[in-house]
Image (cartoon, rainbow, N blue to C red):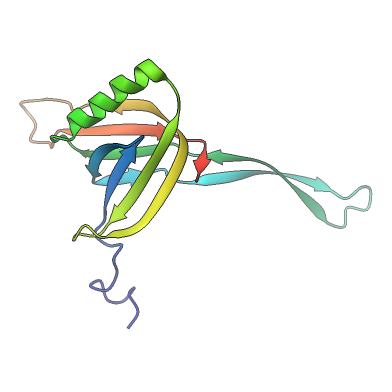
Amino acid sequence: MSSLLNPNLDPGLSVFFEVNVDQSALGAWSKCSGLGMELEVDSRTDGSLSLFMHQLTGRFKYTNITLTRPICADTSRVMAWLAGFGTLGVGGTATINALDPGGTTIVSWDLFGVVPVRWTGPEFDTNSLAVATESLELAYQGFL
């Protein structure tokens, strides 16, 4: 039976993400978005005949990653990493592990040139019952 038809066989249905940057464990995250890359392509015709198009490749462009989770004890680890990064200011390496509910790694991505772009803390409003969340946005130069 295909894993697409049986949700119990599909390890990607209930994933969370564990993130380590420069040997700093930033804990588990409930959402990871923006992981991707794009190759710049310039289309050019073939001289005056225009029989076909040449696809000239350019640079790779990597999209920023946004991690989101409810605030927790690991939030202090993120704050410590951000404070340490502020003194060095040099991009490092990171690993993002997609984990199943049992904590087993499904797939990993190793990144280099990782720098923090933005951290957003929770909004506290006594009139709302919303979960207090944090977000961390990371830029990177490529995959290892």
